[in-house]
Length: 311
Image 1 (cartoon, rainbow, N blue to C red):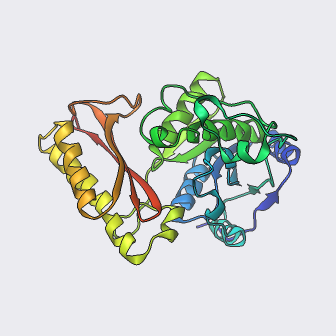
Image 2: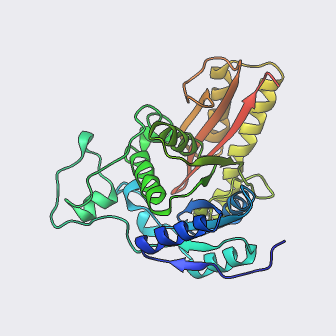
Image 3: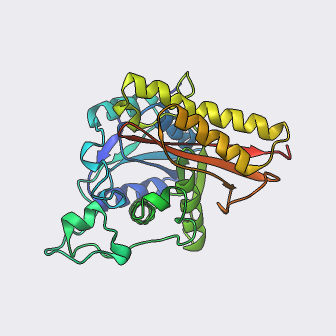
C-alpha cells in the first residue's frame, strides 16, 4: 500500500491544463476520476483503478458539484459535501497526485433566458440565465431509464465531462458502473466525438449488507436504509432466476417491482436492457443489465446487475 501523501489542489482551469501537460511531458499517463465529492469507498475504488491503469501514471480526482445536471426541483442545495474529509481520504491512498476543484466551470451571463426545449431547465439555467448555452447530448442513450424522469441530467453530465476532458486532457478516465447509463453515455460520447481517452468502467462497490455505496445514502433514515436493501436482494434473486432458466423479462421485472413496492418504496423504473445499446429486451438471451431506480423517503437510489446467460 502506498504511503499517504497530500495531493496538489488546483482551482484554476489554465493551471490544471498546464499541470497535465507537464505530467505528460514527463512521460506519464494522466488518469482522471470525475466525482462530485463526499467520497466513500466506492470512489476510492475508482482511484485504485486509475492508479493501476498505467505505469507511470499521474492520477487526478475532480471534485465539482455540477449544477447543470440537477433540475430546480432536485437535491442540489442539499447534496452532501466534506472537502476537507475528501482530501484526507485521497491523501490516505497515496496515489492521487492532484485534485481539481474549481469554484465554477460555467459562464454565468447577465440576464435570464427562456426555458429550454421541452420546458426543462437545469439549476444552472435557472440561476445563470443567458450565460452558458452549449450542450453535449447523446441523443438516444440519454432517453429512458434515468433520462425519463430526469430530462436535463445526462445533457448536464455529458457537457461537464466534455469540459473536464478539454481542461485536463486525460489519457484515461474511470467511471463507476453503479451509474450504468451514465457510463455507457460517456463511452458513446468519447467514441462519437473522437476523444483520445480510454474509458474504464469500475464495478459497483457495496456495503457489507449489499447496499450499493452512494453519497446520498447519508440521507437515509435507519428504517429507510433497511428497506433499501430490497434493491440488491431483488436484483440478486433476478439474476439467480435468469441463470436457472427464467428468461422472461416481464416476469422478472414484475417480481422486482412487487418486492420493492412491498417494502414501501416508490419505484421510478425497473428495466432490462442490452448492456451496450441499452435497448429493451423481452427475453434474456445475451448480455443484459437490470437497472432499478426507486425512492425511499426523499432519497432516490439506483442500482443494477449485469447478467449473461451464455456464460
